[in-house]
Image 1 (cartoon, rainbow, N blue to C red):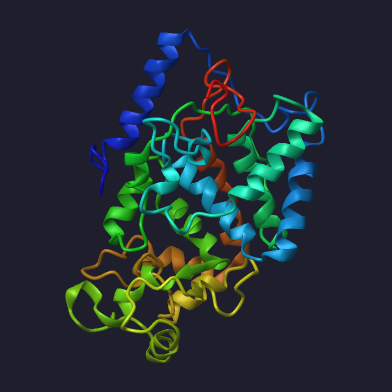
Image 2 (tube, helix red, strand yellow; image 1 turned 180 degrees about the vertical axis):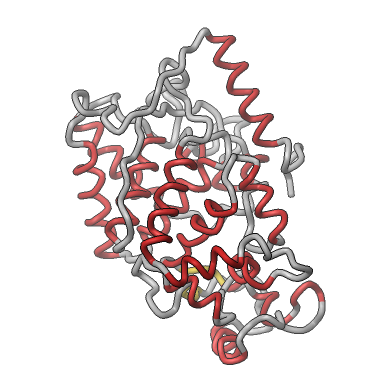
Length: 338
């Protein structure tokens, strides 16, 4: 990892830095509220929904991509839209960090949403709030739960390239993943529920190639994988190309429907990523805290939906800039003075 701070200290360091910056600038925080734009931009939800609906007609992957952008934003610097910033001078974009490079997508849709909102209510809706709204709408449009999105975030004015290199990764072992979520006060139920976003979308072969051919340097496949599933994946993900960007469905039975099928796959040893299957099958008893939750969500879609909505609200509350902190970017890719 390229991060200069340890995984455990990174969130605390980010929060302390934000608080110090706010104090230095005399910034004031304010509460988030579902009704934040009720008077200043009353059609914000409908506008975001319209742009996403139009985008997904030509690209069914867009909902999954937008959910992932919100997640990758909140886990670096808090939910401040920092992921959306392009390179500028000495500032390296989070888009170029290893977990995002070549896989984070949907930025043009965010640009389209921002342009529509700037036309309707200039300088009012933050890019950070656009990501939060886009994630909820993407889940709902895919058949998943809805929830009240708390709004009022403001946009950060710098990216954190090193922090983005420390995002939870599909190859992280279960203990490390649980710790990375716990660092942001997300418990095991939140963790397993948020992983359920993998019920829609695709993953590149390079992210699970080692599970098919050389798991943990063993020169053998991951022994927890269903053999028929292993054979199927090997057909589209050849041994000769460990960096293949060929796509496989994260949830083959219902790849574009937000449901609890993902957890049933895991119970059948058909989780695509190590981070998926590890919640049930991690060695040495590591999965003891998460396996029962996987089983619970596989048995009850309602339970999964409720837990997912709760976890998304909690994630959306990670170190937001509010009140007079940060700014409202006119263009999500650059700070206003850039």
